[in-house]
Image (tube, rainbow, N blue to C red):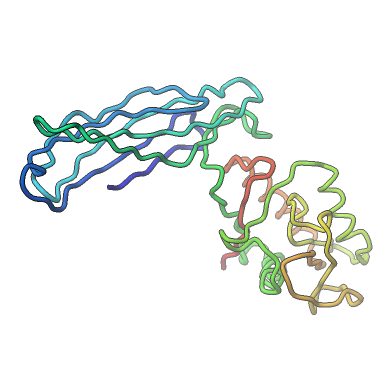
Length: 265
């Protein structure tokens, strides 16, 4: 059985597909048939569902069911979730039908993403990747790589960052990290984890830095708490801010959602 769902961050419709194949059996079991019914719970309606009765034979051949759902979280500011389930029924003559079910993780749909008009749906537990390019922002990438190598979170699904939209936390992250940054022409202070995360210094911890970052009085350190600071070209810092904003909009990363930070060549 293959059980999966798919959607689009720019659409209010998503789907739940299921594929079933009998790979072995004997006797009357091989004469059974299967059908399916798709249901949902939450802020959604079913648009369509198709899994008509089909024989299980021949073995190792796939039986497909597919259903589509629409979110009802469409009003301005709305956020809603929907969990979908396929109920599969196996029937065989005089035998009592056997029913099993398969549920996938909830979709979350919203019309509440800052700077984005309209409705879209995502799987909120999935930590999408905010990616910085070394070719475009080499100094930023160097800092992120050093910070993550020192133990600060964000690079993996097991230890992602968590977004904050609370202006108080964002300001506190920035002040505690960069409030005493040196004045260097055409450079500005970069902090990691990024200020728009719940993982910054507003949650405690101490600062760390690295050679070449122009913070000689800030020691190096390791571990998953705290924040790293580094002076980088102001143009790269501004580019990072734009990348962050575009990423949060495109992936519909809302307050308290997980996300990762990756770097590429």
